[in-house]
Length: 348
Image (cartoon, rainbow, N blue to C red; front, side, top):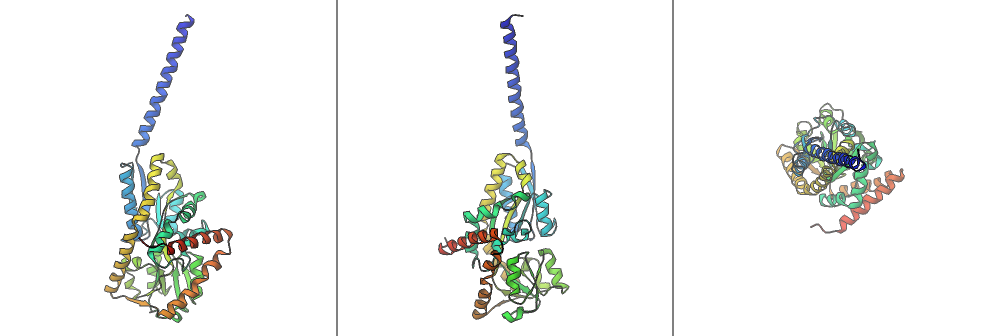
């Protein structure tokens, strides 16, 4: 065989190998684009802002991914209590959760920052805080080393106190056992009112009130109305504090298994739906109050002097709690500065 013929053969083999590699790459890309990814989304509520967000988010992701991501929403803690939902999302049996961030305080103490009492005084201000770039950057990065990837953040509604016996003035709080979220900000705040705070997942609250284990609960009007708290607790004291924010977390390993374009869709739709949910959240709050009153519930408002004293009592909780931890101190500065910017910016 001549040198020229040998060279031709070698070149043919190289060309064929390159063609085969290119074909394999194209087939691999095609298979990745054809693959369908499952996304289970878990929320603690039903017919309320969190699960409505979840359905909207899923619909946007399915549409924008061309059906390459398919999913289902599991409301009302169908996949377990809030702690179990968090664990499931961390370890991958659940791909996405929509929960109040303070329930993840065991993962990182900064998750509870938005539960600081007095941080915001309206839903509009809270939504601005949730979309503040500095707040989003901090909150959505938490838990990255514990299996989580944040994609959304928004305020659901202010919280109030639902109770078996009426709480008409601050003195009526004393001696009561009241459910709170898993937050030191909340426990310290309500201890200052003479309450024994009991951290509890939402699904356990109504049975605990019915059985007399607690006297009432801090929660939103949405759950109070939609989960039929009227069956056990007729009274709601409108404190409007603290605010209930929701964070949207996906399993980090699942997220990283997605092709880059699907990752971008998850991030984009999480951010966009966090903004789009605002009018729905406001509407749900108003409807929940109307529904509860129509069912025979009584809304109680503290007198102006009592409400002022209530807010004054809670005013120093945020600084007092956050100073115990350098990360909390820095994070509290970020959220309070965002709240001040939001208060100074006129609503559109």
